[in-house]
Length: 383
Image 1 (cartoon, one colour):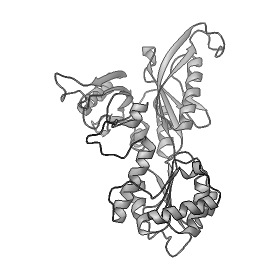
Image 2 (spheres, one colour):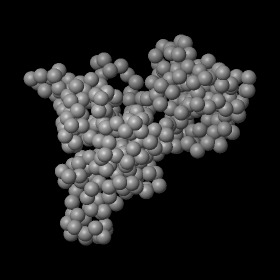
Image 3 (tube, rainbow, N blue to C red):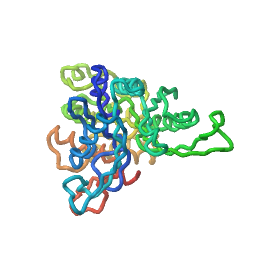
């Protein structure tokens, strides 16, 4: 649901009733991950997707039904030998989908609206909903903030809300979306630790929304201009940094979120980066590269890549070793940057860099899928 935060916030502000179908779990091969959503408003307008087209029509009808009867429901869609193209997932996977109505007068609407508005602003927010447990609790939302405070209730005992808030805050801190099982004392609201007199279990769908990950492109060159566009397309907050003010201008990089004039290593020192950040060094000039990479390779970021020929790469490794960079740190360096696509133009090179970033993020191999025996959706298999 949070992946549609901007649109759903507008619907909330307009007072519209709507229903949201959210992917809860994926088994086998399926096109969308947990958290992907399709929403339908009272006028029949649909936004989003839960399957890339396989079961959209059936889910749309479920949303319309939920708007009419006000009843949340959990449905499973999978491959059907008899009529695969009618409803089943033709890719052979199975998905569980939570369909929840959000009527204009629903008591949980303010909770959802607050979480959606926070996510729409690009701030951290997590939404927990019961997908397996007491039927009366199905779909009830609990909104949890990064500091652990919460709004709303899952509708059960206070012990359930406390247990859910702890697990949800942990997933939000990691930026993960998925299901988690919680155990709580259903008979003694004041007993949240120790012996369990009336122990119950519930499975929650936790959706996490965090500010977009950072992509910092060092070097205000033509390749950087192309990479900015691809980075924005992939959902990154993109910064271009170069020490040369004549090249580092907003006019040359209109798609960038920021254009910074500073020495690359000094700018990097001033930033607080998380494990999702990617750093692309396109300067291929030792006076910029070496102090920058010496720092970058010691940061817990997702990706560090550097542009240059193989001769430049070997010279760079020598200089980095002389600067005290260890072999384990050097193993993290993607250089020459990008996958081998035979790229020539800045746009093709940006595509090869982006492909390597996605492969590193998702655990892909970069080999053609044709004839390969690797899983198509690596993160789903890992989950």
